[in-house]
Image 1 (cartoon, rainbow, N blue to C red):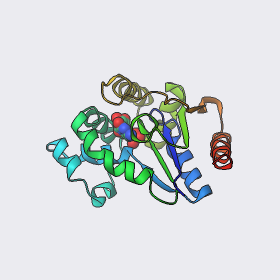
Image 2 (cartoon, rainbow, N blue to C red; image 1 turned 30 degrees about the vertical axis):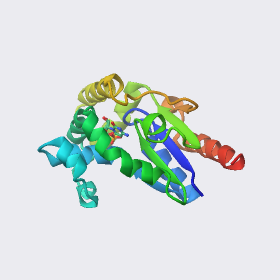
Image 3 (tube, helix red, strand yellow; image 1 turned 180 degrees about the vertical axis):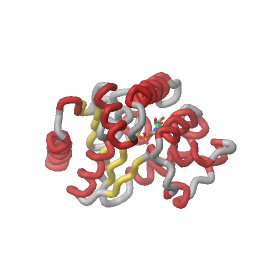
Length: 196
Ligand code: C5P
């Protein structure tokens, strides 16, 4: 079976949590596409060369989840040639036999507009910053500023800006528990599987 769940949305909205829960529930493979951009940013040097030469080992670095790695990722992610170098891998993953969940910023808009299920997971910037701050600590105002800077870069770039894909179900997790958000995502997948 070829079945893709495309999940987009801004940083710390809960995409990863929902993606992992769906992958576990339905037995689909999961790709966190943000890791690709984080790994390119962390490699240093020419980002286009880094994207073309990316390996599985690059994705296993233990410093990819930091705030700084997120900022570096969103800078290299605005370079069209970096994005182009990562398209084929993501498309193959999305349409591989067995089903796939991919989360990112352009999965339902650019990578896999034909996805059977598209979700746009969002929450207010202060709520997202608070969640991220609970993970990383430090100064919460700085975390909010970083979230807002990344939103502006991801939504404002010319190539594959973050936006709600046509046909996407919008989940605003600002006032939802994790369980509620996951239940709504599961219902959207079940509806599409039932109609497949
Ligand atoms: O999702 P995550 O926070 O790990 O993504 C890091 C950065 O990578 C994002 O801020 C965005 O600039 C970029 N990204 C992207 N397209 C994707 C996934 C991530 O541009 N599909």
